[in-house]
Amino acid sequence: MASKGLQGLVGELIDNICAYLSKDDIKQLRLTSRELKTKSDRGFAVKFFRKVSIMITGPSLSKMLEISRDPVLSSAVKELKICLVTFIPEMNVVRVNGHKHYRGFHRNMMDQNTLRKQSVDVELLSCIMKNLPALESITLLQHFNLDDRALGWEALQAEIGMRPPTSDTQLIPSHGLLRDWAEHLSPHYARARDRFQHFNKHVIALVFGALLRSGKTLKKSLSIVGAPAVMEFLKTKDDDITREILTPGSTFAAEDINNLAAPFAGLEELSLSSFEYKAPSIMMLSRRNDNLSWLVDYFTAFSAVKSLTLSGFSHSSEASIVKFLAASAESGFPTLKSLSLQELPFNTKDLINFLDTHPSLEALKMRDSYPIYGSGTYGRILEVIQAAPCIREILLYGTNDHALTYGYHGGPPGMPYGSMDPFRSCTKFLTGLNYDRISIKENTAADLQKLLGVYLEQQVEEEEEI
Image 1 (cartoon, rainbow, N blue to C red):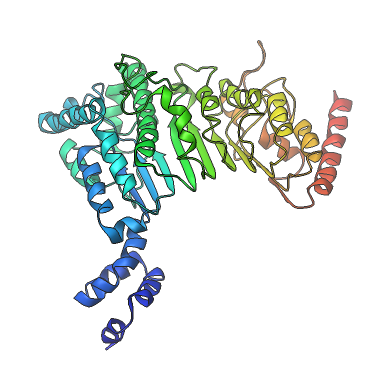
Image 2 (cartoon, rainbow, N blue to C red):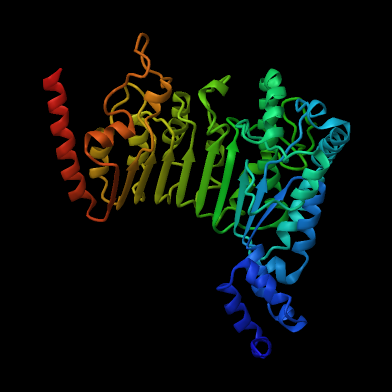
């Protein structure tokens, strides 16, 4: 009887009901009758296809292309997640999974290379984007969400005999085969690491190229996890790929960068997490002083961004990221309203320069981010913020004391292991002020005045003790 009553409702009401049901309940509802299945198509699409995860493999892209050609399913897709699954020869799966799975792994590796070299991947992705009218966000991921697996995940796992490997060097040791793979990979780690960065660079170029081909405009967010330190592309579409630049010019070339302003004209949120942003110190073979320097070349494209999030791995070399932002502060992110730094060291002077040149900034959020040794303290930053009339929200907190934990944050020669400026670490700074977290909204100037009073009193006490 209840089923009959539901069948009599119009499709819009069924959609509203589906919005309050779990995924399992919607599945059961659709099994009730053919009429209810038809009427619940829209609610089903919104629940299951609002965010879709794919891989850069032939089967995964083909499945997504089929979905994009369905008028009901395609209209529900708002976010496209691309999981950075890749296959490199350094993965010695013969010793792990046997020859059958090795053949499957090798076949997928060759297929992915063919997609890249012949620019088939950008053709497929651009067709997919063109067919998604509601698409507003793209996210690049280096990990799998088992509750939201990428299209083709199960078939690929069965074919290669292991969880599809991503370009993340942070291998999880608790997963048996993945742990064995990590052990075999370790002798070739440096080469594998370079291949991973090249792949990430290619997928970023792939997204840019597909956006240009499809004419799609992202209206909400672009999130890149595993952003390489540098990004170099062929100068023109006619140039041949090299050993260092693996992305064909027909997919994306340096001359296309200036054309990205159109696809990102409405972009509100930009989030970049650097390559190996969660890698422990033992895995850090080399660190550069030009991390994310390529971002400067894309300032024009990202001029509409209102919220910028930068995540690092708490290594002192990453202070160059804020340095590059500060050096081009007047031309980058003119309408920025929120800046979030996560596990990202910085030179206090650079951050202050950036704040001074962005009067539109309303919120500053820092998690486990710290001034590098000798560059100043959090107190100095708070003094500058106090003079910034537009800032209405400050969020400053630390989850652990990185400098005391790892002891590799660029202190002066002879500095004892783990020792540090007492106000340089976010956690120690907050502990000194008896705060676990500073969260200030509205009335910022008055609250900061009180906070600075406590800070200055403690500095006087520190000097007297010395």
